[in-house]
Image 1 (cartoon, one colour):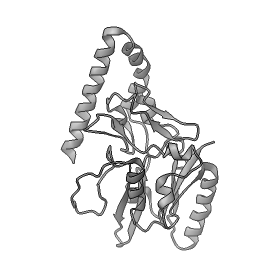
Image 2 (cartoon, rainbow, N blue to C red):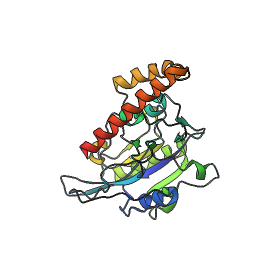
Image 3 (cartoon, one colour):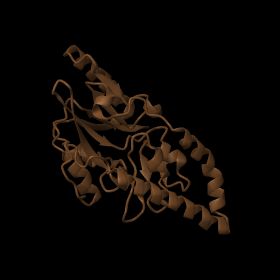
Length: 258
């Protein structure tokens, strides 16, 4: 049975409780930040920031808030391109990264349409939201959901949350929010993070039509033969070395764009 997080952006009051709870539960270090002309801080997810709040201002001067973290895609690019099998889907739909298997190649970073995974400069391992798998497996809700004071985040069975989202969107349209819509029902064959929006997805910084890049398909096809080569003596070092070199390049490119 697939589970999901429902994000009701109309209920969000930008307290950043979700952002802090994620840091606290996962014992993630704080990062150096500075004001860049936006209240979204840090400006993007990072290897040690798995959950943050996006602030967007409309032309009408209305603020839009949205919690942003891994989307836990049904058809996840990170799972499909990883040559080391370091990213897997759990039975409840969570896309879970295994740091012990990660070789720091950066393919997940390069091909995620939501720009979620990032490589750590300290460990050279990928970091992203784990869906609080260690909590949900024990019948608990994710840390971000538990701390939300206004009920903007909910966790439960995906189909039930989708039905709830449809009813909420209908209610919002009746209240005058003509563009109210659901994001995540069908994107990437269904997301594990479903959004109730009052504007188009782009207004919240969400891609309108997330999809695989052409290079992602190529790496997906190459994953199996690369894995076989990596298990053969001399080729093992060559393949892993090449992939880590790629990861270094991706990481340096990210540093230059910050």
